[in-house]
Length: 118
Length: 111
Image (cartoon, rainbow over all chains, first blue to last red; front, side, top):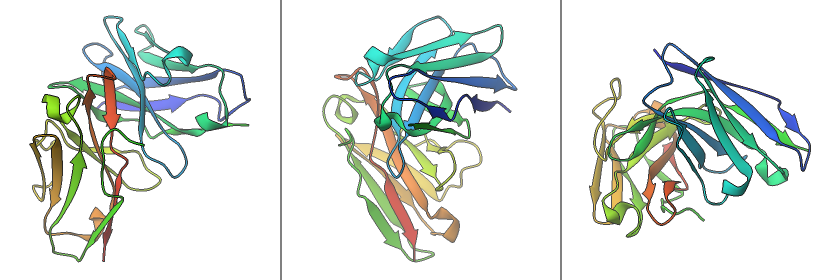
């Protein structure tokens, strides 16, 4: 049973970089699109981007200039960096496994971690 | 403003059937990209409910079904139970944005 766990600071100052890590247990990092999503307070889900084992990445156009998603196969982890954050980046951040079949859908999710920009 | 449009809320009594619509356009659902559905109980992570328009992951009851036609998709829940009360989101791929898009979510209330 694959499980994902987000970790990282819960408080980030404006203009600084938000950095989160997702640790994969019970499975391996190959063959999926490893994704980050977020949910601002009281609002819906927003896709941030994903990275594949092969090294390709795809980011939400609205965040692309500020986002980097990378994979560390040696640690079975993937990470998110979002720079120049503002209060609008305050959200619950989820890591998820993207399964590729007729598109990409998230079949395994982490529990989420709350990040406040203040 | 979400790329995919869902009704903000729906409600029905226990035992009844409810449908939640997800309306897209030609770069996403209308282009033939699959629609997927997630259930989110407030305070918890989303859970995959339907993938590939109408497929249920293992463990999801057959009370849940999905369909897609043209530029829209629907999630149907029959035999409503109290535990179905949650937020439901549709998701697809958008070729003009070259990325994943979500609906704004629908809050289901079981009366």
